[in-house]
Image 1 (cartoon, rainbow, N blue to C red):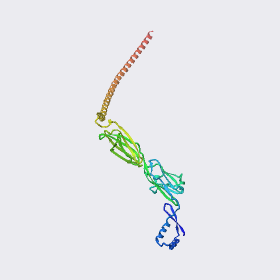
Image 2 (cartoon, helix red, strand yellow; image 1 turned 60 degrees about the vertical axis):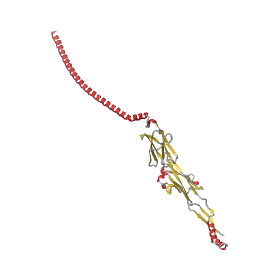
Image 3 (spheres, rainbow, N blue to C red; image 1 turned 120 degrees about the horizontal axis):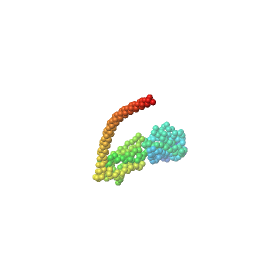
Image 4 (tube, rainbow, N blue to C red; image 1 turned 135 degrees about the vertical axis):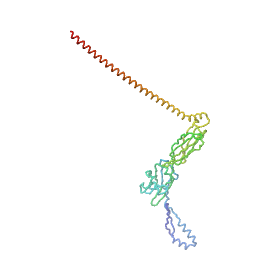
Length: 363
């Protein structure tokens, strides 16, 4: 009895080889056999067609079994390897998103082809091939953003093998510390507002009093910026009895982390029946009136002082005019007396000269 080889090839997987008995010999044996039943022939034919020997060991692509969690702004690493380990240096290795046509990074013919990348991944990927001879490679994605979240995969391709693995990338962002501001009095209490930004995915906010009891929010608003990060603003009205420490906490459920801000509200800021509170509130209400009265008094005294200064200025100008006139009269009188004195002096000099000339003639 003779046999011939039969190989069975499975797409994208291993192939098997077995030995099948020569049909002519088998048919002759069948004709000479003592079981002429066609069932005997079909049964043995099916058994002979089954694969008997595993010609090559099955090759698998191993990726990440669990989703990868990356923080906004950090790095994410996508690692893949062949099992069993074998050299992948001359294989084509493709990282893709959702489907093979969405290229994240391409390695082919021992070099990288950046021109095939999707726009959002350009200048953000780094291929690490230190262990490529053992069939292990890693792609590093820099500056993770919320838009990177989704399904990823890697595919190995050679002349006689192709295989791939897929996994999920989850992105999380822990936002800024919450900030609480006091907005004022509202509905018999004090309105508080809490704000924080830079969260992903959408955060959850919770108000609590000093006993840890939840306070129902008055308003809550979540907005998304151009980078896909969320900002949250929420408010609450704190009534009497819920005062002291009031906290606003914002939680990222994906990370299981939260940020909290606590504010202390004194009794005097809360409305109630206390005379001190009424006096304080009365002072707050009357303070603007007091300030207005003070402003009016200041303006009155300012105007009065300005009028007094104007009156003094006019009186000074009037006195200056009188003084100038008196000085003019004195200057005229002084000039007249100076001219009269000079005339008397000249007359005395002429008289003295005449006397000296008469004395000379007598001698």
